[in-house]
Amino acid sequence: MSIHHADVLVVGLGPAGASAAAAAARTGLRVVAVDRRREAGVPVQCAEFVPTLIGIEVGALACSVRQSIASMATFVERDPPDLTHPFPGKMLDRAAFDAALVRDAVAAGAQCRFAASVRRIGRDGVVVLADGTTLDARVIVGADGPRSRVGRAIDRVNVCLVETRQITVPLLAAHDATDIFLSASIPGGYGWLFPKGTVANLGAGVDAAHRHRLKAVVDTLHSALIGERRVGEKVLAVTGGAIPVGGMLSPHGLLGRAHVLLAGDAAGLTNPVTGAGIAAAVYSGNLAGQATAALARGDARAALAYEEELRDVLGAALDRAVRRRAERAAATRRGGSREALRRGWIAYPQYWAAQTEEARR
Image (cartoon, rainbow, N blue to C red; front, side, top):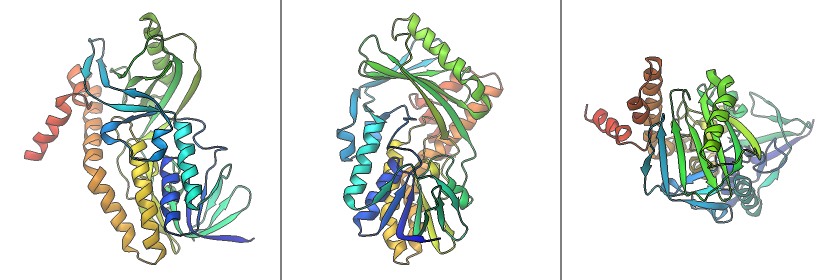
């Protein structure tokens, strides 16, 4: 069987993978990137919101913004909403965003292949695709999502997952806030209504053990919002997927002589409380792509430097969110309370004040 050689193999062409492929290719490396999907960003498995506070400074953002967001309204059980203003952000067209990032990678010189599923990843670092193509690279970047095959190959597995379901519905009145619904009836997650022009993404996430309840949770929220005449009855699209909520994994390893770096969801970089992961995916992808140049030159220290940089920038926020999830889960087992829900959500001072108290101890 013939083997195709590359300096860098990127598995997954979402925001993390496309960013990694572009950054690596810009250093002059031979980059091959593969994705099992038929086209970039399709199907969309994302609520499509990016907070400006952790925004992404990339060209792809400008061409894919569909609406600006000014604030966040948080509904705790049936209490009146608490408004966080300003809470600026952007609603994206994720398919357009992903496609633009892939175009950037191709323009930088990366070879990007879709409908290219990975069949096997050998302990020697050789990757075999479903069509029999065999790829050998000095560096492998795993950007293939929360259930990453690349991560599993180096024993880095996201164990804690939230399952999500989202529908797109007509929005009956203009709205410029992200609505968050916190309730003990949504275990391990929350509901959301994110406006996007004349439509809105309406969904919920729950701990994986409660996945069977997801459709009922979303249907109940949909019915309530129909009753309030905020959204229409018609369901325009349905999607869903898993989100890693266990915190950051050690994002590097070896397969034979090949160095492996993980980025985005594959590295557990999604915020365990909010589920936000787009900005972290782009950031980690860029950083991984830059690290490949040093690794390809034989500088093994670049892998550890990659991890240290991720922990310096993202580690504190991820660790805090992991603790808040654990606290909220414990409170829910004891019957739950509105205070516990507020303590576990970023809109409330309890979320941040608790962290200050811990730092003083």
